[in-house]
Length: 141
Image (cartoon, helix red, strand yellow):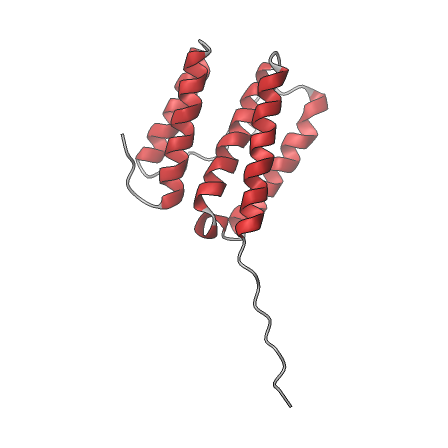
């Protein structure tokens, strides 16, 4: 299955398929189905969006970091990251959802850490891809 549409949706589709396969390999069929459903939504041209911390049962001690990550994702999306860094933005979205899902399960600290690091790396790549602002130089005298 290959999605039509823009580059961010194509990248999101690939990211969600990878997450669905990884969860399936772990025999976590509920989450595999969840990520597969997100891939299908994206395939149809709809942004599946973040799962969001409000829709999850997250331990209180870990909620602040996830909330901050949601705000950061929202901020870079509003800045146009889907246009200037679509692949990195898609990975950021998917890795946030991975981190959230693993944090909700709460029993595989190595998986939580892997998703968190992947999210941070993807967000750093989004930041690195941001076009530089052009400043007008004063005229030569």
